[in-house]
Length: 292
Image (cartoon, rainbow, N blue to C red):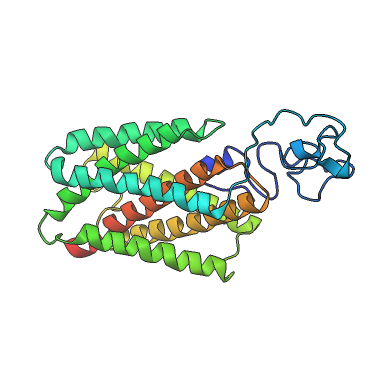
């Protein structure tokens, strides 16, 4: 199942298509796992299956064991949780700095947000995860979110809106995780196509709205206020929740099929992107509701 998340879809990370070319037809005697053909721990690549190894296949110790070659162990849930905690912790730290020092300097904060977007795009098109890029994105995105949230919190009738958005984002995450684990939400090919089409429509409408605001002035198509803005905000939050289901699916498949440990950085990156999206949509929705 190919994810709509650009981090994973770029790499073909799925049960259906395999990960990074690992989904080759199984060779004779190989395991049924589609990654067995290229998995370093599969039969053909395991250093402990080497015939010169005295412990391999019960052979007698007639030869010296080969020199040890480090192997990348498969990704585990602990790896994903640890990397996600590091990435989200960096976002929170950046947001704290932005809230305290950059609330009055939105220009600088917007610049940090644009650089964060560039770093996210660069990482999305890299073949291997770069922890430096991912943490750099998290720090700059945190600065932007913190400054923007502090600014909105200081507006009339908006005190406490960012905290409500944080709580709402956490609620969406927990609800979707429970729905996914209990199989209330099932990620199928049809589900993925629906989310992709809906997301493309949402992004296109958002871009058209920005163009109308830039060249026509005012509220553009009205997606930032009133009843239409509320509906658009709800759709954005729902789409973010559906993207979470796709992210959970990719993590589950990566663990099941023995993706390399370094892929846990991509899992953390994808989850962070989705949670930032949900928070932004939640903050916009709350701002519209409290501003009316």
